Length: 275
Image (cartoon, rainbow, N blue to C red; front, side, top):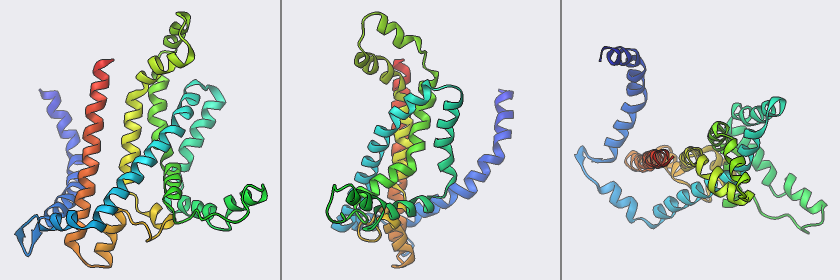
């Protein structure tokens, strides 16, 4: 008991800092979404969910976040397997390739993708030079471009958790399955994949939470044509001067993020219990 008290005292400065700097503003924002003229009310939530445009933005945000997570997972899983099997200089190269892009600002990476996807960008020029297309294809300001750009930016947050789990996996397990006559496909779906699911769940939770609340990437790649909840929040505060609406949308984003964290924690615990 005394040890727990000492640990609590050591954590007190950090917990106090988080409570004042992080939790308190969120609490005030949440309370503001329930207030109209100083009175408790759910009117702002009713107005938000009854508006077809707001609902279209909500579903677009969730769809983009889900597809971004799926694309990042499809790219990250083979990469994580290669990293888990690499050693020496190759492992260092893989780690640098994953970690180094995280030091580059999101604005820089989003601008880079906007240059690639523009009408006379690198991708269109390459496709025309290869004779695959006769005229430039409209890529910028599309949902597809947003998903690809976001998946690229958030890829390390998917790769690293999966790699950490695969790295700890006993390599003798697939070998034992192979010695019993299991095919590579059977070994993957019945040995490797189940053991790596905690890393998959963690990576998906990271990427989905980041994608559902991203602001800079959609602002630069799709602009105002296809708004997301974060862009709608900024417009409510900065242009419409409607703090109640902005607080309501922010609270909805917060609820989504909390749901993802709680859901992923519950799923990770279930997977851990099975193993």
